[in-house]
Image (tube, rainbow, N blue to C red):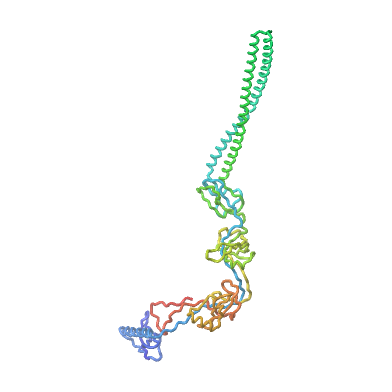
Amino acid sequence: MKWCGVWMSAAKERVPLLVKAPGQGASIQEGPKPAMAFCPQRLPHRNLSMIASVGLAAVLAGAASAPPRAASPRYMTAVVERGDITAVVRATGVVRATCVVPVGAAVPGTVQEVFVEFAARVRAGQTLVQLDPAPFKAELTKARDELAQAEAKVKRLEASLPVLQATVETRQARLNRVRAAAEIARAEAARVANLFQQGILPQAQQDESQASLQQAEDKVHAAEAEFDQAQAQLEQARGELEPWRLQVTTRREAVDRAETNLRHTTIVAPIDGMVVARRVRPGQSLAISLSPSPLILIAPNLKTMLLDARIEESEAAQIPVGTEVSLQTDAFPAELFRGRVRALQPSPGEAHGPAMREMVIEFDNIGERLLPGITAFVTVPTGHAADTLKVPSRALRFTPAIPARELQTLLEKHKILLAARAPTEGWHVVWRLKSRKVIEPVAVRVGITDHRFAQLLEGSLKEGDALVIGQLARQRARPRGAAVTPGVKREYPRR
């Protein structure tokens, strides 16, 4: 085997290199080699460049002809631990108030001004929204004018009734008098007619008595007509009075209604509380419908809040009503809120999804910091095991990247149960790292889980065993002794 010495310029000094001739395990090495003869005399620059080029070519040729090394698999592992484990169900929900009072508009109109914002504290009777009152003021003025007219009419009719009644009584008395006079004239005419027939009185007296009787009867007819007219006027006044009294009542109601509508243009808070929603803005036109939407929502109590979260029916079966839960929010990540399950209600699921349940959680809103609409993350404990072996959950999902036939042979060699090969009833297959490159399958049955670890119920695992949780991608190995090409970045697998 021959060694050649060359000089390579590096920065301001020359570095000696030993170049081994092409062959097995070609490489470039620094420093002296015991079994070589190195000529210390300086070579001309041209000869130095030629020797360096020949040496580098020889090294690259030897590297290309060297057989590649087989790449060995690399695994990520996690150990079996001993400790406590608590099984939980996690869900996400939206916070809402236990009671919300909607405040809407009782009259249509245009919003003139809004006096409150979201999360504002309000008192009962405080002005929230002001509608344009001009149309309602005009309506009230018109209603009051019409009421005044009706009241004046009623007053005139009521004042005329005594006068008409007196007229009727006066004409009744006159009618009685003329009727009495007519009876006297009738009796006198009968007496004169009888005496005339006896030849005692002359024809002139007979004619005079008949004329007096006719005159008396004419007076009776005139008095009766006057009495009937006075009676008719009295009845007419009485007949007009009742409708006008009804008009007064109706128009007074119209005034009351107009005053109420005018008051309703100022929308006030019905109770003490906090504004949890504001759905109105100045300039907005409001119309009254059969189901009007509220403009403002007020929550009277924020000390106790509710949260609605959807969970699968299989998870709901493990959660009895009254279970203590914990809540966290992005708004207050360092705060932990405590609550309890208040109800589990049916919830419509997806068309092809699992059956769902609506979990209603009641919790104490410490300091009233959480407002309705905030998203919260719920953790519900469903089981606890103390001082137990804990298997990493990622190990239960790992399968080595080997051909299916080879995998089947390996499972049969280690007598893995069929139940563990197709996970059922808690059985799984985990892969234990025996040495740096060798793994073996182990059948385990697990119980409760906290999504990081699972409780080990059966299986030949012990505390500290390394279980494979991932496999790094295979990388083609560099030939043994091959040089690194200058300027090419070497890539390493990510851990």
